[in-house]
Image (cartoon, rainbow, N blue to C red; front, side, top):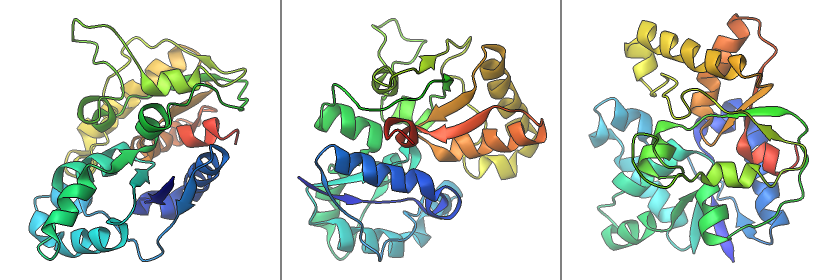
Length: 244
């Protein structure tokens, strides 16, 4: 199959290795990947700040360059969910509506579309998995702990295929890290305290790395870890699954 690869702007600017790992991982799994060079921001930061009326250009461009792909893969839960829920086009309304259903976050694409059952990857470290809010409650990548329902974790399933990796158990496995996009700017003190609590849970259980499907959350926690001069590192799940 041929997929269009959408790399969110913060991944492109701050964590390009995660984008490269996504591309390499998909190609290893036999996927023909195309990266449209005209792509820009999906518009989520403006929409989250109450300025969704300013995202029209982002929506039109996204529809224009990705409408013809069978699937669009995004290594970011929050960006994927934003596109799934809010993409619209005045010029191509039918195409944008159809496109919303073809957008997949990387983890759900690997588990739900490719149905990956084994991976040739090695990562001999203790790893804490951060369940980002958009991935957990919007994309349903894992079961929410407050529900009386059978537990599941799509990222956990993929990480279990990695040789040498030990997934640590957290006290509060689906707690928010406090990033919340522009929330971390508008409510800086609350955001920082939530991030410190989230990091502390991983450190308490001996995690050497913190991973997840949202680099925005990982970026927030990485800043806290650096300020604490911690040796714990953050890494996007694509880098682990690709074998770094």
